[in-house]
Length: 102
Picture 1 (cartoon, rainbow, N blue to C red):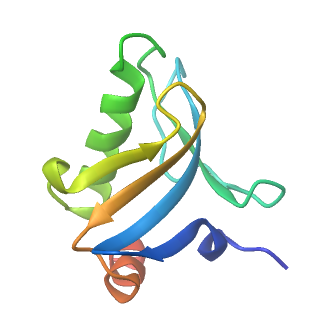
Picture 2: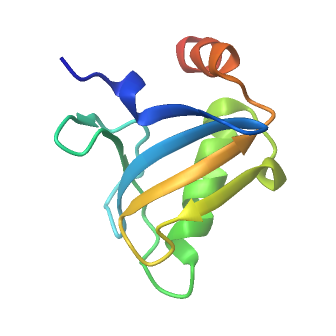
């Protein structure tokens, strides 16, 4: 059975997080469930999907959640799509699990 751990991959220099982002939400939320048909963790952001505002909020929210510098979080795919993959440099799988549960 798929789980949220399927949305986290090891990547060179860090970990890759697969998200399904809903921009323009009334309230921001991460994590916002797991979508097993897409193997992605849900996320809601208040910013609208225009001029990179929602993407910037995604990075800031992940930085706050994982207590990780924004400069070390990179959007790899999905700049204009709700399905995004982000690389968290310097955050390995074990650290990811620790951060997710602390």
